[in-house]
Image 1 (cartoon, one colour):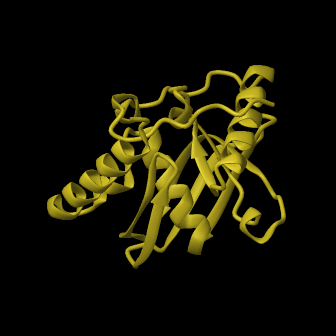
Image 2: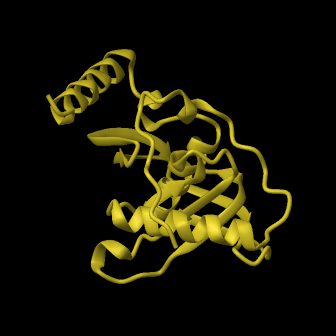
Length: 172
């Protein structure tokens, strides 16, 4: 497994729409393993392939790793089949938008389907953090960042903060 660099906004690659995976094979499993390793190294809970520069519809997630446990999950070609009318506001952050956290409103429950790392079709109803994280990562597959859900003013402030943080990290 290889830790790959995570692309950060405003890199235009993050706006690309990812392509469906044609066949779940060893290359896709290797990609998922690299994504998990990269996500763990960055101390995140979710990562879309586009965030490491691969425009494929692959997501990895581990909601338990915050508690020191590991329960990695792989979502290939995920689709939302249904979303509740009821919404939840959750504070979201993103490995591609480091150190920025904002409230985002999303459906509180969804039903989604995807292929697992072995190509088996899975369908599941999700709520809470799983629903929020799945929707957040699936947005990446469409070239959407969580900042895109914010008002123009909040998005502008967040992008300025990000640009300032990048400048401060750059060597003189």
